[in-house]
Every structure is written in structure tokens, then in C-alpha cells.
Length: 351
Image (cartoon, rainbow, N blue to C red; front, side):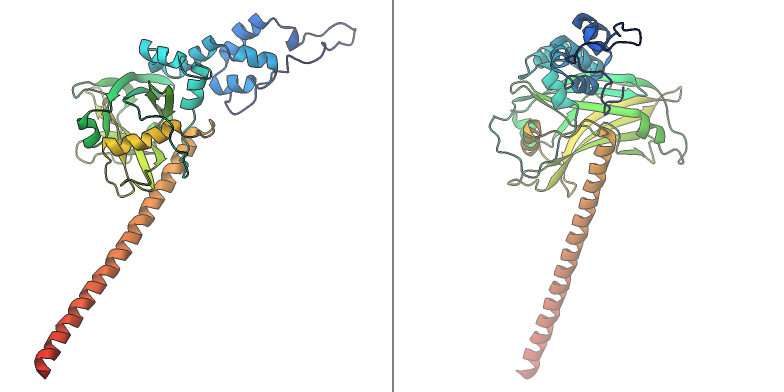
């Protein structure tokens, strides 16, 4: 079912069943037993469709709010959430458990330029639940835990590595051959979800654009880098002013059989000048994203790419302004030097 379309389910609170031409009762949806609705209909829906169905009537709202339905949806959408610790955290989310977790993690975060003041402490630990799909087939599902209170994390450039240096994940994807292969299939068929969870605050946010925003191939090594990005609002008081890019890079090498192998999956944060942020500054931005608003659930891939293109445009304009400013300063410096030189020789000549 299309997530953006409303399910064709009539209200279970409707009046009596309709009659046919012979005067007999025609079967009505409201006549179905709630157990049949729950086990044979609601279990076949995805998250957005189940949420929409719950708005149809009071009875469907009650049935579609069952925790086990949303737990099943979370596990099927993000297999990494099936791990015991993550599953327990999801069940403890306020205002609905797995239903609240889905509402936080499925849509993209909004880059709100006027975020509300934070009312909770920064997380001392971050849990990353990452799932990568290619043509609806799971490639990788992994959970990574990151401490944020150590001096190493706060002072070093922010980076979360999902795989160890020697880890390799095989895939059925054919490695692109030749310079003309631009990775179009990867742009359309690969999806990635990187859910960042604050275990103490019971909050979560998905920091992936769902679909890649760019696919690049290294000219020397031949490795393919698939880039996902989420555009967030920077810290108005810190060095990362304006917007920042939270980038996830999936690096793939080539196996002996010609298939791609995932060698590295990492997340980094950089500002509009291309400078990588350290853990301290990144944590401020991530904390705001965890507490911030969420966008609409439909067309996540297109929306993520649109935001990324706007961000690239803002970076280009910013760089042009800086170049014009530096050019004007260079002219002023040269003019000052010429004036000083002429004044000096005039002084010597008329002395």
C-alpha cells in the first residue's frame, strides 16, 4: 500500500449494514470481529498506512495502537532494532513505546532555524541503529554504541565507524565498470537508515536522507562511495553557525567475482566551510535534532535530495561571497602599499 494514500477502510463506527436488492443484509466492515481486523488486515499494513488507518474511527484507532503491531513494524522496517537492548529501549519510549519510536525515526528531521530551548541534558551515550537495503534486500543491519563523555570524543573530529577495519560485508551488487557507469542503480535502489538513539532521554532521530544524494568513484582505487546526508541547523553560539551537514558514507570495494563489498560505513559532521566538527560541537547539534520537529513521512528520498541540493547551493554562494570579500581586501592592501610607496618617495624628493 502506498504510504501516502489512505486505506480504503470504511469507518467501523458507521450505522447498520446496507441491504441488497432482495432485502438481505450486505456484509459491512463494521460487522467484522476486531480479532479478524487486527490479525488479517492491520498486520499487513506498513507504518504510515497503519497510522492513517488509526485516524479513520475510534475502533480502528484503538486496534491500530496495539504495541505488538508497532513492534512488528519497527522490526520489519529496521531489523537492527530487533536486538535485545534496542528493543527494550523502544518499548520504554514515552507516549506509545514502539509507535512513538516510529513517529520519531521514520520522517526526516526538520532543519528548524528557531529551535526551542533545550530542557534536557545532553546524552552521555548514543546508540546507532543502521540498516542498508538494496532493491528491498537487506545488506547490513548493525548497532553501534558511542560514549560522548570522554575527552577523546569531545575534542576529536566527530566520526562514528560502523565496521572494524578488517570487516567486509558482501553484497549482490555488481561493481560499476568503466567511467560511463555513474552508479544510477545505486542512486535509485539503495536505501540507508541511520537512527540515532538517546537511551537516557528515550528519543530518536533518523539522520539519513533515505536515498543517496551522490555516488562517486575514486579515480585511482576504483572504490565507490555512496553518500547520504541530513541537513541540520548549526549552533548559533559556537563555531558551526548556519547549517551543517551530517554525512553518512558507504565505501564499497570490488570482490574477485565482480561484486561490491561494503568496507566502511561512517558518519561525520561538517560545516558550510567544509570543516569537520569535533564531538563537543556535534553533540550540541545532534541534541537539538533529537528534540526537534519532524517532517512529513512521504517522499523522504526526494525531500532529502532537495535539502542537500539547497545546502550545496548555499555553500557555493557562501564561497563566492568569501572570494569577493578576500578580493576586495587584496585590492585595498595593494592600494595601501602603493599609496605608502608614493608618499615615501614624495617625502624623500621634497625633503
